[in-house]
Image (cartoon, rainbow, N blue to C red; front, side, top):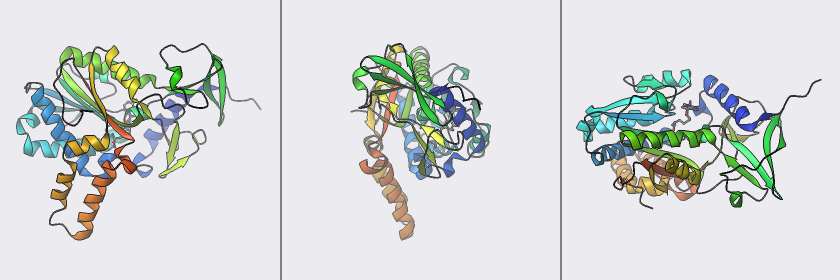
Length: 331
Ligand code: SAH
């Protein structure tokens, strides 16, 4: 028997997730905020309308979403803007950045007038509002371990980790390593944010990124979710969703490298509460049968309460320098 050659963790994760998203309905395995409640997309739609007004109400605006999943967030946002912000609604053209053909089909059912792209660089020029919910956490990470000044990078061989020594990595904050000495780097996330920042600085607009994450390097945070439970990360590649915490410090530095500013990060709970989640929930629940009303209020709590999604998930905006304060992002 020949032993499998070690593969760098990010290459393994990229391959595993591409297979996973191509062949599965991920929403059987995990639930995201827009799938918990329509209120999430509605509030982000209203947020986008305010962002557009702060941009000076351009006649045409690219309303893009990266990794839109089932398309629920955008469908909920569009339904609200048609009613409460008709000028913004008419100015907005929806563009989706999505690599999974299977999910593109799902998205087309809910937002038939969208245009699809593989990558941020394929979006047309012009002012942009870009939303990304749980997009960065699915992108492949590298992991390093620093012990006594010696660096090693984690690889995967079969279903085991192996560590291969490597030169010190500049730009990674060693003082943020976890107790075992691990540090993570999400290069595609950093590249995405830097490209977004360059584009916003050149053409105007804002980006809103919401993800589960930490203020600084998370150390070792790789996890696999299958059937709503934690699963082993390295076994049965392509059968579970592999994610890692997003390092919001790294996101902020990536935005600044691209010539943009940031607002936030703030917790998802603070963000949604500032946008009026609870009054919206009460209004939506009013007049419904008791169990339905309770479900609406329960969903709002799940999104915003610290012990549920409210604290672990965070929101950050990327803007051109000098952009006025956006709703919900004041720390
Ligand atoms: N935003 C959605 C889905 C999150 S799951 C929600 O909140 O429900 C991650 C999404 O990102 C999926 O739609 C997946 O197909 C997409 N995705 C993953 N990697 C991608 C990549 N490199 N480029 C574009 N889309 C990607």
